[in-house]
Length: 390
Image (cartoon, rainbow, N blue to C red; front, side):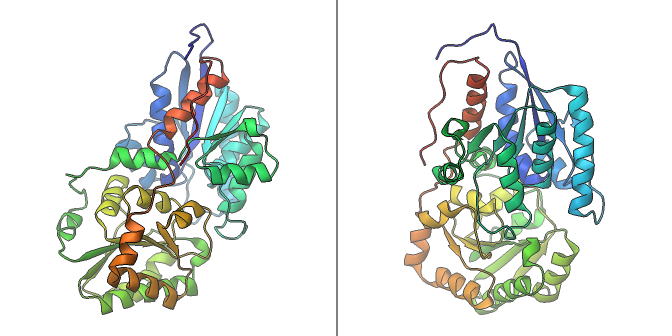
């Protein structure tokens, strides 16, 4: 690879605000910081999540250069969006970055992409090309990610599935780079087979001689009856399988907290915990027998550790895991969730088929590819890296 050291250093701004964004962008920030002769790295956070975001920043030893600290109690999507665009508008006017990186499908990503466009600053979209093809599921993420893709100049696509989505939508092939998923980079970096949990109860619970089921549930579109059905299925699993314990770090949403408490509390093998920090969560996943979740990103993280995931959603923007056999799409119907989970607990052949599934999301080098692509974009290197082939 030919390297040009005579090019002027470029200001690369990363903008993120939630814990999932931070975990997936942290490895990219770390890679950018390894080449200070090429890139001045500016980290901007909106504070869309607060405590959870700060935990991730501490874990990855990243100190924001600018913290807008925008999150307020009971803030609507419209209010946060207005505040974020206004705050980022001032930041961009003052710092004048050469390039902006945003991640995924959050309100922060949307606001970062739009504000960069308003200032005519080139945008790179990390985790581009995901699609559920249903604008209300997940909501508001499906529309957010589509809008960010439109604003982006470089689209860093985790897998060939996302690349094909974008090609069908008319994006130019030279804009698209299949990099793998940075969540894999972060999970591999964080996993520790000798890990001691920060939440002391987990150090006791993981010694359970039976099967640990880890649960997460928080999606807005599942509020109400869908979430009640999910939780009834989980309680039924615990009732009928005495060797199972359920560990559920409950989301801070008052709706989720109330629903979980009304259905899942007062069971001697269901443990409702406070939200876990990122290292605890990753290492809990790696020690679980299986996972039940309505999360997007967990579909990537569970495949790193070859743990079956029962996905409690009607759609997924990550069909790669379904194709690989690592995830089962259950919807939110109580009977469907129960039957799929019960079969995995009792049918060794089905369970082993899922645990042996290929991880389609990455090889741990996505962040390196992204930084190498930026280096090529600005002429610091003459060659592009090899794309991730899955």
